[in-house]
Image 1 (tube, one colour):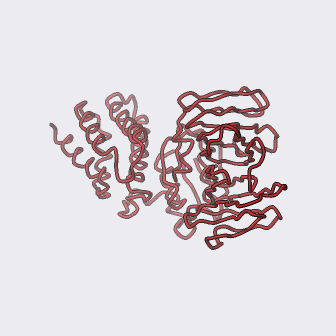
Image 2 (cartoon, one colour):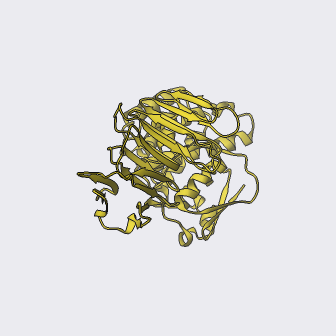
Image 3 (cartoon, helix red, strand yellow):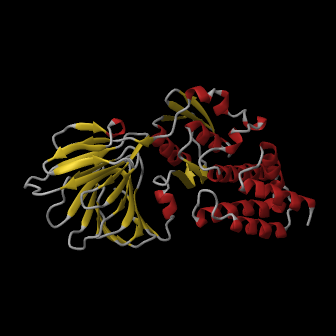
Length: 405
């Protein structure tokens, strides 16, 4: 085994253990970039990776495998680099993948920021004194609007019973979850509540039938305080993940509200699924994890199966994505940004909602990104990760982030 191979194995173990120094990390990246790495190294790294696949934060195996395969592809391409510019591009891609992995391994913090490396301190984010202008990540923030129009700010209200509507009590649990408890005669009138999250907020709700709903930033859910009749029906804007309580006799329906009126409706019996329907996104996306759903929209009706995603808009033909990346669809719920061949506009829209910022582009940027980044860090750290691709730079100006090619 060559000295390079021995050294790389040592550094890689330190890397997986999250005990690598800034200097050793730089050396690791340099060794990954050399053109003399043998094929045997790939198998050894795979073995190390397999041994660490259930790391400190228990990431899904697919995420680990995708990241490892990406690194190995860059290594394999080393001897075939046709021109210096390809080699430079490859270097940035390796740094991007490694930086993402480092974030994941350190449970939401960027290790190199604890031990700064001089070569990383000259990016645009750091130059503009981002520490003084930084934005903290979003959190559990929502407003509950009762049937009589009363609004309750949940993030500042105490735990326990926060409202009573007829014989139904609204309870804020110490887990940060909203729940409903009905007793006795529910009355003839149907009362509706609306849970709304601001930009930079999210919330979790247990509906009166036991259905669990996770609401993403800049979203809302309208629902009855007690489900009556032959069906259970709610309305959403933005994005929500549902784990529907099974009741074959009373189907569960989700109406998707868009200003165009083309949101459609999802009908289920008992299932887990995610609906993404923001006004500033081109498509409505329904991703099914478990069970079966039927989606009714202006172009017709489509039934999807677990692992499929239905995409449609008020223009163009709908399409079903088989073997959809469900981890990407629900990454927001698990506290992560997950980008797979995502253009800069899509990336920045996710960031803007979570950090409640505005985005300005100095010029058009035709770049795509892959990676997973924790949502539990400040916006400057997320932007630093994107800058490490070498494709973009950022400048923070108050509540605005300027994107620079």
